[in-house]
Structures are given as C-alpha cells and as structure tokens.
Image 1 (spheres, rainbow, N blue to C red):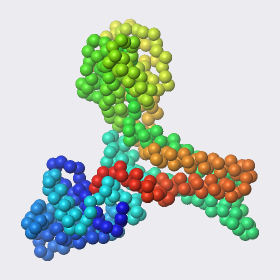
Image 2 (image 1 turned 90 degrees about the vertical axis):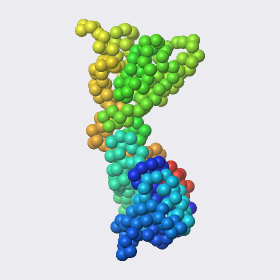
Image 3 (image 1 turned 45 degrees about the horizontal axis):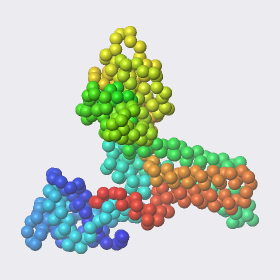
Length: 443
C-alpha cells in the first residue's frame, strides 16, 4: 500500500440522508478537487479550513451543489493535503461524486487507510487509532466516554510514560555495561529492583482494567437460568422494556436461547434467556437445555430465577450467580423469601432497581458505572502488557540473584519492545494491516 498516492472514499454510511461526504487525501488532493469542483462565485478561492459553496461538474454539467472544505498538510487529520466534499445524501449521488474523484486521479481508499495515514504521519498513535473505531462502535454513554478519553491520549500517554521509565532503567544499566571504566553505577541492586518493581506495579494496574475494557466494548454476558415457569422470559422482557420473549404458563415454551442487549445504568448487558433446566425426552427441548448450559458456562453473571410462590431447595450458587426470587407480587404478607435472594416481580417491576444494583455490584462495575474509572484496554493491549510484565519479572529475578547485568538488559529491552508495540513505535506492517483492516472505509 503506497502512501505517496491520493486516496478517496465516501466517508458516510450508505443510504439516504441529508448530507453525504466524500473524502480525498494525498499530495494531489487539491488538484483533483480543482478538476471536478467549481465555485459559484468567480472571486471565491480555495482557502484551507474555509467552506466554499459551488458545484461538482460532470462533462461540463452540474451534478450537485456542494460545500467544499480543504485542509493543508500537515494541519489535517491525515497530516496530508485533504479535501472533504459535502454533497446531498443520496446513494447514487455520493457514488458518482466519488467516481469523478477517481477519474480525476485518486484511487479508492482501503478500510482504515485515512486513519493509517494519520498514524504514519505522526498525528495519532495506535491507541488513538483504535479509539476511533471504539467511538464509532460505542453503544453506551460509558463506552463513548472511555473511547473519547483514549482518543485524547489517556492510555497512550500512560504507556509512553511507563516506557520512558523502563527506558531510563535500560540506559543506566547499559551505560554501566558498556563503559565500566567511567564508574557509572547502575544503582545498588536494591534500588534497581525497586525501579523495576515500580514499573511492574504500573503494568499490573493497567492489566487490572482489561475486564473493564472488554465490558465497555462487548458488554456483560448475563445468562438468565432456572427451572421452567420461574419467570425467566418475563424477567428478560422487563429488563429490555419490551416483549421480546414469548411468555406462557406451559413449561418448555422457551426451547432455544434468546440473546438481546440492554443498557442499564450506562453499562451494556448482553442478556441470554435460556431454556428451563430440566430433564426432557423432547429432542428439540433437550438441545435447548444443552445450549443453555453452554450459555451459563460462558456467562460473566448468572441470574438464577426461582418462583417465590413455589419453594424449592435452596440451590448451590456459583460465585458469579445471583438468586432472583420472582413473582413476589403473589406472596402473602407473612410468606418467607428464599434466603439471600433478590425479590422481584417481573409483572409489576417491583424490586428491579435493586436487582440492577446487585448485578452491577456482582460484576465489580460500581466505579465504572459511576464514571470514576474508564480504562479501555483491549485484547491486543492485554497480550502485550502481559509480555511486558513477564519480561520485567524476569529482569527483577535476574537482578535479585546477581546475574550478569547483560541478561537483565535483554529482558528490559523485551519489555520496551512490547510497550512500543502498544502505541505503534515498533509495529510491523503485518500488525498494522491487521488493526486498520477492521476499520470502515472512509475512516
């Protein structure tokens, strides 16, 4: 993929709308728009960062009336000369405008190529590039806020600061290795270990936020389980605020897992209504029960629903399980409640706010829901931070056993490399291609 040519793409989603945008970026961006755009006022000139009203020309005729905005390198998103044509939002119209740009000398952009050029031109690091897609895909206010903070550089700056600390240790250690006659002391073994330990603690704190990052992007996996007719489907409908699952007094109505998402207190919950857990000879229902077992096994949280009006032996709860006693609206004033259960009524909504609060507490997301901590580490960051921590631990062990300092330096260099890969300081083309290929075209 060449970065010396000029690319173009429709940057808005397909479909009808008020406005569509065609983006052009590269050394010939301004020359290309001059070939297809004409201001309505003869005195108007293309001035960077100023919108100009004019027309897109096709064979001398007006294709559309548009607004053109240009940006001069390096003061643009990509760091190159850029032009953005805002035309009317029709599918055919935006496609024709793009076609004219391609005929005038541009080539079609690949997915994520605008953001990739911004990375190569030093406008963003990899964590900020990934935050762009997180912003586009955000489904809750918390996810959007976390992605926005990452785009501002919160995570990237923390990684760079940690990398600087490790680099200082490496420089000090290698200076002593290379020039022992200068008497440059690498600090005592205790002091060196303390510095490495501090870097390990910072790395561990970042790793501790990995689950929060996954939840912000993907949501909390919740399985609603229990015996038939306990009210699992009714609870799903109540949490969703709509009639999604069929509710019937006949046992076995739910024969397959039903998955939906709900934003509760700003956190995305991926709710799975499972088939009633019971022995059955019906092959279809048996498969539904088997799927329920898999959903329960993969869940972050299980809502074990029981019928409060039909006492049953207290179930043994897993660590990630909440006992939910449904149908409390049918209980008499002196009727006992199952021990340690959240009492609710899926019919009236009674007890639902308390259940949601319990769900948030059980997943450890109280701070996340309050907006106190909005780390957004993804799976790629986690893998590289784990490699960083492993290298730092090895370096600390070598120092503590008075091993040759060259061995510790090798491990610290490995830690530097892993940290650099997070922000893109040492990434290969193959890794970069894998990241940006998941972007949408035009971004």
